[in-house]
Image 1 (cartoon, rainbow, N blue to C red):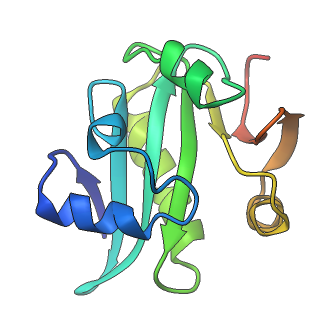
Image 2 (image 1 turned 180 degrees about the vertical axis):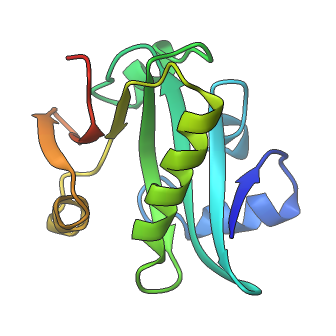
Length: 148
């Protein structure tokens, strides 16, 4: 079951410590008018968590992502994801994308701001993304892209 995490509480403060890529980002950075967190639950067990940011255009790094943030945007950026159960990360991206596009019909681009690691590349390519752009410190993988 997909859960949209809408408030910052002690549970959120604890789970963001498990983020293997961007543990240093605050809960306030992750949950605000331009950003959300999602969790995927399998019965009573947490399967995976991701953080997304809504932007106008596709950012190359965290600073650009923050500068381009806009709640009335054309792009959703998955900038971190972590999994507690095999296969949950993939399912979370699918379910979160579907939910986001239902609520935000103007979304045209579904991309990532991923670290430059083999693990990230394998994960995204295996799950149907293409490598859209390589940046100085990250890679944008595109799941859906209408505007470039």
